[in-house]
Amino acid sequence: MTIGVSDGISFLVGVAVGAAGQYFADKYTDRRRAQEQRSGERRRFAELQALIPGLLNEMTKDFAGPDVNFVREAVLLPNQRVIYNSDHPVFTYFEDQHPNLAGQFAILENHGLVSRIGSSNTARFRISEELASFLLTESK
Image 1: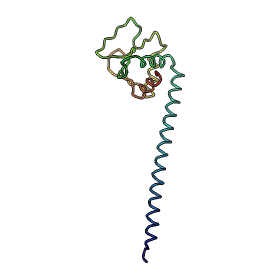
Image 2 (image 1 turned 30 degrees about the vertical axis):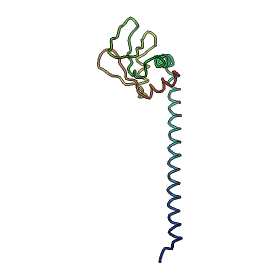
Image 3 (image 1 turned 45 degrees about the horizontal axis):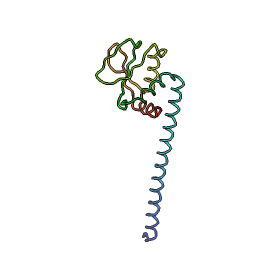
Image 4 (image 1 turned 45 degrees about the vertical axis):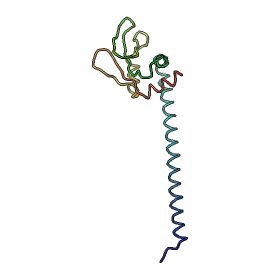
């Protein structure tokens, strides 16, 4: 049995159509997944905003300030009378201004948006790029 030219062309066209179909299926599946991820992130941040509105509002205001695009560290202090010296810019949040501030940061930590750094008695946190991006977007 021999394969004719028309059978060969039909086979190649079928392969091309199948490959194109797979390409577009993957492309639109990736778009849908990205859209679902963005929707999930918006929902997650809306839930956090409902849980800890005061802290997130203050953090948003901090990210609206000048020269803060590269600040990713936050320090928790008891009140404004306590001085924290650092060789680089940090955001400071005060326990007397936010009820259970450590608990609020624990919520952010549970969501993977901050991580505790250092081993001193002063609570220091690294702010994730995901949270920084959200705060920068909200501050505009």
